[in-house]
Length: 398
Image (cartoon, rainbow, N blue to C red; front, side, top):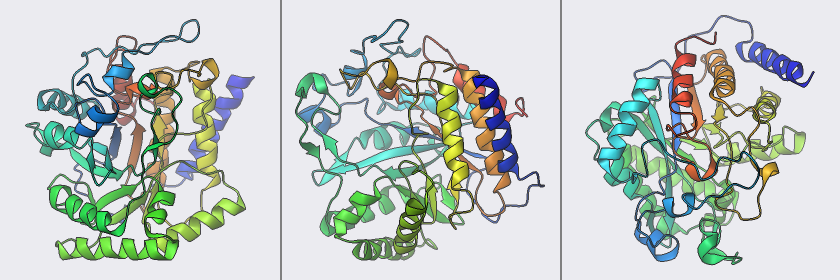
C-alpha cells in the first residue's frame, strides 16, 4: 500500500510538472550547449587548504581525514564510504580532469562550486583555482559559484579534534569592506571566464544563507544596497547584469512562508530560487524524495521567479556526528534506480517550465562523501548513479 501511494504521488507530480501541455520555447539564452543544464554541487574540502590545515584537518588531505574514519552505526550501514578511484585531492588537476571527462560522458555539464570567505580570506578555493581551472578540459564544462556563507561551529567539520566545542569557528556574515573584496574577486577571477554559466549573458551567482547575507548589512533594506552594488560592479565589468539565485533549503509551503520569502525575493532582487538538497531527511529514500516533490508542488504558482528542482543521491552525515544513527541516515530503497525516478520528475518539471526559465536541474552532489550524497563511483554502486543520469537524459525513463 505504501509503495502504491508513493508511486501515485510520483505520477500525480509528473502530471503537475508537465501540466499535460506541449512544451513552449524557452525565453532564456545560456552559454550551455546542451538542452538541459545538469548541475552537480561540488563540496571542495578534500585538499590541504591553509585555514583547513590550521583549524580542522592537519594531515594534509582535507576532509578525507574525517571521511576515512566513518564507522557503521547499525547493521548493514555502509561506512566508511569507499571511493572507487581512491582518495584523490580535489585541487589536483589530474583528478579533476577525470571528473570533467566522466561528468560530460554521463550528462553532467555544469559544476556549482561551494565558495567560502572566512576570517577575511577565501577558504577551500584551491579546489576551484588549482583543480578545476587548471584541468586541461575545464572549458568544456560550465561552472558557477554558490557563496556558502553559513556559520560553522568548531566541532561541525571535525568532532574528532574539537569534541563538544560548539562555539563558532567560522562566521558566515561579513562586512562591507570584505563584501567589496568578494565582489571584485568573483568578477575578476570567475565571471569573466567563457565557461562561467550565464543566463542571457548574466553571470549566475548563488547565495546560500540569506539570513547571514542580511546580517552582513544589518537589515533587508541595507542588504538590498549590497545587491545593487554587486549589480553595478557586474555591469561595470561589461555584463548586462547578474543572475542572483537564492539558495538554501526549501521552506514548508504555508502562508507565513509565502509572505516572508516573497518579501525577501522582492526586497533583495533575487532572480530565482534553488535548494542545495531535497531536505526533510527520511530513512526511506522513496519517502525522502516524495516529500521533496510534495514541497515543491506546494510552492507551484506562489512565486514570480523561477525555481530549479534538486534531486539528492541520499544522506549520511554520520562521519561528522558521533551520536547519529539509523534514523538520521537515508538507507532504505536508496538505489540508482530510485534516484533515476526522481530525476525524471525533475526533468519533467524543467520541461514544463521552459517557457520562462532555463532547463536547469541540480543534483546533490558530485562529491559529498561526508554526507553520503555523491555521483562519483564507489565500491558499492560503481557507476550506477552516473548511469542513471545518462539513462534519464536519453529518455529511458520516459
